[in-house]
Image 1: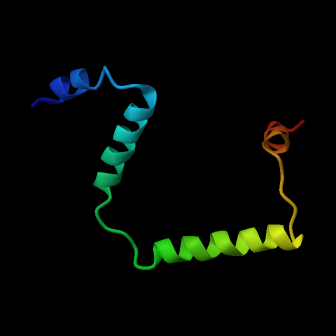
Image 2: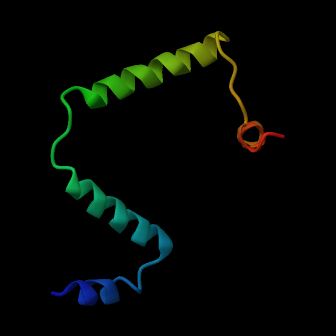
Length: 72
């Protein structure tokens, strides 16, 4: 099957299905993964969650982030 045929056959997919297909294709390019990367991300996420729960850090809303990046 040619690339053109593959692209044609995906036109009937909705946007979520096309996004999933794109994700799968991109993921298939990276065949190697650093040892322990999943565990490291999990530990970081847990640490950040605990910091938020304890009040050590305060969350920032998306609208505040957008404002800051625009220099408002």
